Image (cartoon, rainbow, N blue to C red; front, side):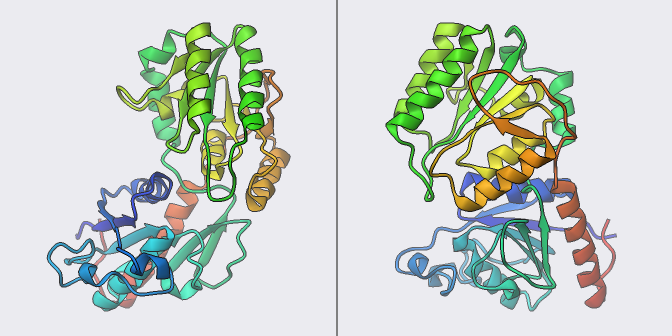
Length: 327
C-alpha cells in the first residue's frame, strides 16, 4: 500500500499556509511545505500570468521541482500559476486543491474550496461556513489536558484576546485603537484575566497598549518568546474577544465553543461582515461591548468536512488513473 505524498504551496503568508496545513493534517498527512517568491514583473501578473522562469520545474532550486506529489494543496494569489505548472508538469497525476477563490475560474485546480460568501461556481467547487484551520478538536482537547502553565496560573474568568491589524481591506484608525483598548480595560477592571496575542499586522500603537494593559492588570501578552500559545489561549478561555479584520481568526475562535465577542470595525470587509452575521445567527458570535458574555453553542469547524471532500476527490482521481489505493 502506497503512502500518499503531499505538498503545501503558498507564498509564505501565515493565514494561507495555516489553512493548507489544517486540511493536510486532518487527512493524516505530513506535507512538504513549498513557498514561492516570484520576482517582479512576474508577481505583478499573478494570478493570471506565468510563473517566474527561474522557478520552472526543471530548475534544481525550483520550489516545484519533482518528484511531484500525489496531492498539492495551495492558497494565495501568487500560488495560482504554480498550481497550473505542477498540473501540466505532472501530466495530471498530481491531484490539485486550491483554497479560496483563485480569481481565474474553477479550472485552475481539480478541487476548489471557498467560504459560503464567495461567488465562484463550478462542479469542482465546494463551500463551507467556516475556513479550514489547525485549531482541531483534538488539539484543543490536548491543550486542556495539559494546560500551558503561563495561562493556567491566571485566575478565572479568562478571556483570550486575538488582535489583528491592518489588511488590504481596512486600516485601523486611532479611534479604533482607543475604543478597543477602552473596552478591554473595562474587562480587566472587572477582574477578568486577559490572555492576549497580536499578529504581525497589529499596529504598533495597539500592540504597545495591549502590553501595558496586561502588565498593569496581571494578564498575559505573548511577546513571541517561548512556544506559541494560540491553541492554548482558545482551549483555556471562558470567552474570546477577536477583531473583525480576520475571518480566519473568528472562525478559529468559533471552533473553541467559547463565546466569541467580536470587536466590530466600521471599515470591515463587506464579505466578512456577511460571514459574521451568519455566525451571529448560529449563536456563536456577539458584539463586544466591554462586558463578559456567557452562552453556549455547538463548536464550528468545517476542516474535517473539507478534508473528507478532498479525500473523496483524490480517491476518484487515483482510480481514474489506475493507481493503487493509498494507506
